[in-house]
Image (cartoon, rainbow, N blue to C red; front, side, top):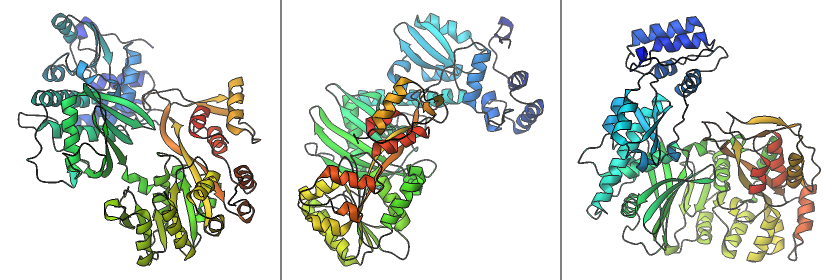
Length: 596
């Protein structure tokens, strides 16, 4: 393939749609008929000002192999063809303060460029126009810096020109103004409309409102599950948790962090002045496309100030089924048997962030038919669902879990979900509810299913009551799944593979697979090799054989072995199956699941 090089005669002109399509045909990526069709449609549609990659992407042009082309794919292809350095703009890896100090927003927009890296005397600038080069010499003379040009997606360049420079402008104004007074705002907002601040700022924009708006939209775009605003000695740190891993996103001036925290607390109806004790709150946001997303807020007084953590609850969680959560066919059948019982207690156990809430809400969504009354007592209510009667714990009013269950018992319930069994009083009320013919779902914080029995015994629940009421216990964990775009299947033959398989499956005799998949890293997964998470499940059914081992003086090892004989599959073995299916890796399973 002959490389296309920009020549002096072709310098300082924009890329043309016709030539891009000709090159695609020449490289045997598309057919000539498809190229002609795109040119004709573009002529009729009047898309002359759009970048060719955008036009082709909007036309949903397919390659000869049936793949729909997009701007990112075209950018990488043309970079390889023209021997240019391809660059994917990942906003989580950009030093916003550094890059926006290189040039003005107006200059970047006029030249259709975007600074993406600054390192001493070297600056990397992204462009999507290979034949426009005059700005390189111009910038080099003005800045006295070494310019490295990279080829990037025109959609990303246009988008981040607005986001990066608007954010930097808001930050500069906020820092100059210090902490704004918020006492004059008396309207406590219940629904926050995102995207109303607009892309272009003027002198009357409220910079803190814009920063909070940006923060939430940015977190949603990046698939974050949690947002951390953390004070340090002289600055504030913004971090996102994505697929279970924290990423540092931005460093704020301390005064801006304080102002943003106050703004968010105000929206959540929290006490803005009180910074000496922890507080909880919630905010419902609406995206520009109309989608509503809820956030649960928690503040904590730390050595350097008030830390704010926001947990994001995606409304799509309520639309998921058990297959989406990672249940195998066998696990799904066992779980359906447990929640199909007319009474008894079913427990979900695991550490914080292991997906217990998602599992319970998916279960309640299935159970909440018009024929039954489903009631919940939670602290706090994590996801509001119109099909459920949800009650929130309020200790200040003596409305505890136990008192809530007692109140719900008088509401003619069929199914009761108790957010967490924390003490003997709550455990007693859950047992009384199950003994009177109600199905009770609840959570515990234990390492595995058998240790939940030990935990309840430690709380003071007699063994005979556990045998009479508990029908099943499910422990769960979340592991990162391999990116479907770049994972690589390899033969299972390395010595390290066998060692890890033994670590995961011991002491169970499970035959290793012929192949396993490994992470590679690509644009879609930010070169991590992973995208999304899936659940590992360990379900202990309290059959007659298992109940024989539930005694006041319990032998956990004997109880565990009885569980294995009755079909319980430990978390690590469940993980090994996910590895064999090419969904995750040994390392992820060993990180998440306790020793068998």
